Image (cartoon, rainbow, N blue to C red; front, side, top):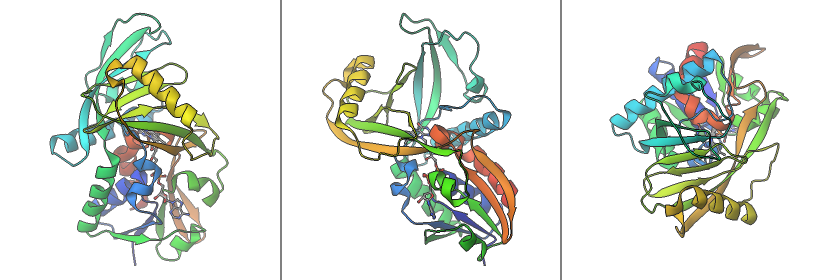
Length: 309
Ligand SMILES: Cc1cc2nc3c(=O)[nH]c(=O)nc-3n(C[C@H](O)[C@H](O)[C@H](O)COP(=O)(O)OP(=O)(O)OC[C@H]3O[C@@H](n4cnc5c(N)ncnc54)[C@H](O)[C@@H]3O)c2cc1C
């Protein structure tokens, strides 16, 4: 019998499972799909606390995750790279952003209208289609078990382990009756990388971002709350390309390699990470990370593991 069953095999479930295994727990991970079929695999997966406002726990998780991915990039972990990032602000901010304490060396540069300031820092960037399978393999090699299984009710897992982690992303809304959980739709376009190495994020409305990876560049995006449509819209794709080319002209004419939609598992009130006693055992909730699941992942996993084992 497992000490802990982690339900959900996205970045939140995988990192929690790994940290639990490192603490010596017998861990089984239940997931109905492979790692590349999760929302986590759609993520541009650049470290940045999109959509979050300051809370001490978020800063702690973001800082620990930044440090963890930096170490992994240094160690040559597949899919983890570091990219210089330019945040182009439009809101006239003058103080340090709340997340700056987590992000290493942050610089502030003047810039012309319509922007009010450029914030520069180095950000870990993760190619999830490479990283998630690597992480799963590492978990299995460390003695973890992965079972292909979908639950209709979380109680199913509680009949097989005294503690479970609920890392089911957007599905957590119905699985534990949380009305604050909702989708924030994100559509992205992937183009061949013409030789771009700097990430750019424009704070306009809608937000625009250009995130170069090794072979392709992720262009985005959309942030459509309560929109459940998972089909890419051609007009949205064209608008994204237009905005990104205006921002980074080197992208003009770059061949389109694909387009994707993911529903960010958002939650009003922020991520839910807490232990709850249920009749059959303990449920440690770990869901609702919205547009920042990669950014919070390893730090959050430390807390989930401590709550669960
Ligand atoms: C376009 C886009 C760009 C993004 N860019 C970034 C970024 O740059 N940086 C960043 O930090 N974040 C980014 N995100 C957000 C990030 O993708 C999410 O925060 C993260 O993927 C959430 O991870 P998760 O493990 O909670 O959810 P998921 O990846 O959705 O994983 C949930 C898991 O639960 C499983 N599951 C669901 N229902 C059941 C069930 N009934 N039984 C068993 N298992 C179940 C699923 O199969 C899956 O394995 C982006 C998201 C999108 C869509």
